[in-house]
Length: 141
Image (cartoon, rainbow, N blue to C red):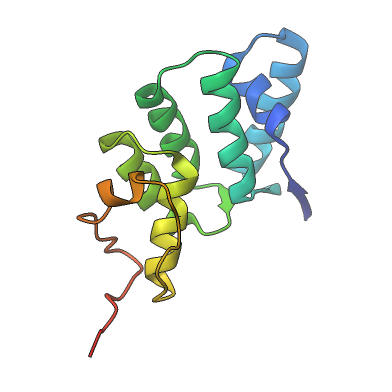
């Protein structure tokens, strides 16, 4: 079975359908993945780049971007590195206006029982979020 890593622009052509030919090519690949004929993998960095491009270039509102990315990450036939972590991150992104990568860093730190060193005050907005699906709360005894 063939395995593929997907680039940001490939997913954008599928999501935006702004180039009919490229949309059809991307759709064919995703359809083959859905039929389990091939494996398609998305790494977390692509999710962050999608967020950046959708918000910055295409001016899609954060809430809509969060919904789009959450649906993508939850797609059962795609192989998503750190999928459960990304789902929690994107669910939080829907609720709080904090940079997507900062949320990821915060949750990743929690998962590894590490504190985040930052001068960014947005991390204070995350202090009451406690990821549940994949993390153990740190013990400070």
